Image 1 (cartoon, rainbow, N blue to C red):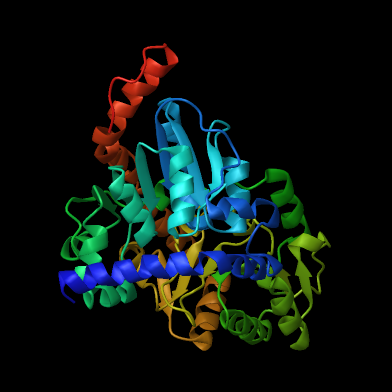
Image 2 (image 1 turned 90 degrees about the vertical axis):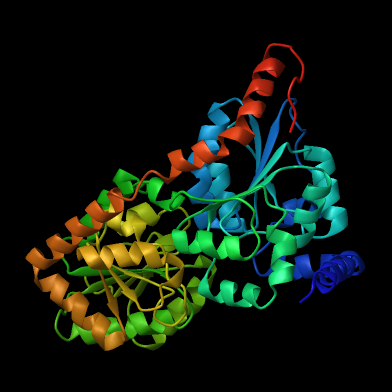
Length: 443
């Protein structure tokens, strides 16, 4: 694809957005009916602000979903501590819930505007950001163009480029360069990610590591955790975390295999998308399994087969209920899920083979003995049974996983160091604004 075709493709994309803009209400209403949009805040998706812009420098940070939001939370807290205004946008209802619960009180949350010229311009006209920071791989062509036209530095933090995305972009390098080339800096998770962004036209790339490792041990309400542990008592227990479509059936099959050997077995199942819990519960019930959902607040009884974790923000509780954790999106879906949280909460980590999105972390865990990969349900059942019955091996995996992940911290400090040239002028301006000195420096 030549430069001319790349520019033409971007113009076509923006033009399509302009034509489609009047009809987006139908799309958003459809998503709202499925619980994927907040009806009360739908105007924010058109770029309308729900808050006044505070005076002084402003950083816009965007994190698409729950995982990205939690990963950048320490970065948000660090920037907020400098006295700089910050607006965080997210794209999902669940991430908005997490943001509202955990953000510093001075940080404003909004839903991200649709990547259409009118919505993006309306958003930017109101918030007037001095710096835009996007998490992982969340870039939208119209947004990038509008920020570039306003000379707002754009930085991609905790950046990653999956195998699939890399193949797709590599076939359209001119188009990739037209987008990534407008970024002021890419702060990548790994050397592989960094090299991929360089090859696609990003002018400045730094490797800082994965911010998700620096998030630390996930919170778990001690009272609720202890109450659930009292219900479970000493039953053999394992947990399947962040499962995707098709994997819940696999977990059910593994439970059935294991129950022949461990009649008191309890399986904890936490799907990646809690809104699928009704269909998952129906599937499990049809298989003859006794299911209790966390949202029902019903007690876990001795005959309970599956404890279905379908609440938001309680992963720290679920992970503390077992010492054996299987990570989803790795057996049926591809990409894997981040093993840092189970490692930090002291679990032995199991996963399917498809872990491309977290390749470096899994490689380190496998080399240290903290994680094992499985090919299918039978292999997963075999590993779970072995770990349930062999405390020495289980404890060795737990220690190795915890030590490996702990040694990989530091991405937050390295990211802040890389961001410093962009943030320092804003810190100065924030100080001047607080003391009535006006705006001396600008980006």
